[in-house]
Image (cartoon, rainbow over all chains, first blue to last red):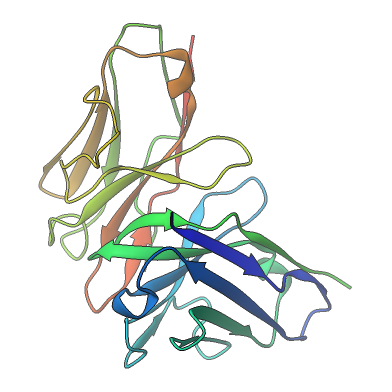
Length: 118
Length: 110
């Protein structure tokens, strides 16, 4: 069965950096685009970034453009999110998610909490 | 990249039907037939309920249906059941691999 397991969350000071990882299994990782979606405490879902199946193209929400970098290692079945210049408003649960077709997510990880606080 | 507009909350009694709207623009909802809906129970990851405006993944009850008119998409849940109580989010493609979510609607089953 499909499994997406995020790791790397934690508490970081404003201006700091963090790298999230998402280990994928149960499907051919290299065949699917992948998203990061976040959810601030008590708030709604916010799309963060998308990477095509082969890593050739990457797309970002305006709120994170220039600060976050999505990447993948298809040999390790792993998705990454490098987050720099973190702000308090980046505090959220970050979900790794598999795209099945255009802008449609069929599997989500359990999420990893990132807290930006001094 | 503005969020799609959903009502903050809707409610209905068991057995009734409810409809949740999702309003965007001609650059997202109105421009593509790539609207999806997700159900999220507290503390859980979202679950895909509808994709491509009106298609249901296998395993999703046919009580759930989707539609679209112009810049507004809708999710209708008929024969409400207690387990339907959750948050619901719409999602649309907005071109250039950009995705936008709605603000979410809390469904209360009375």
